[in-house]
Amino acid sequence: MLAAGVTKKERDVLAKSTGIPLPMILKFVKLSDLARIPGVKGIRSRLYYDAGIGTVESIAELEPDELREIAVDYVASTGFDGIPTLHAEAKFTVEKARELSSIVEY
Picture 1 (cartoon, rainbow, N blue to C red):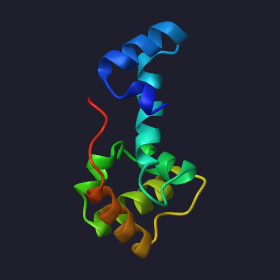
Picture 2: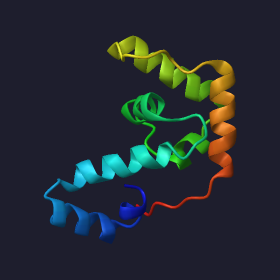
Picture 3: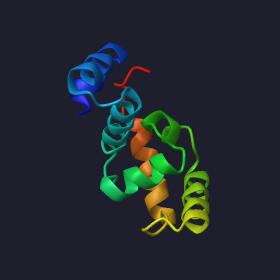
Picture 4: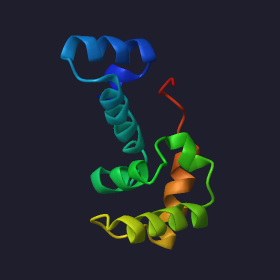
């Protein structure tokens, strides 16, 4: 999904050819992009995306305590089916996000 939707033009073509609405295509691309961060897979990418942190770049801009606080608040306020990010995990996630280059064009 990520490879097929790197640019806005590619996402537009994908939406037209599949009939999947463009916002849904973008959501899938963002979830796939978040999954590039080591240790961030299905449930974590969904947690971050749903909590409003939809890009690798957004995570890279946060401090680990901020990432954890956002996750804790989101889980507490929504009943998200998963545990919030742990301190060590937040630190690792932010460090790894900062090492990744941007590949999705918005």
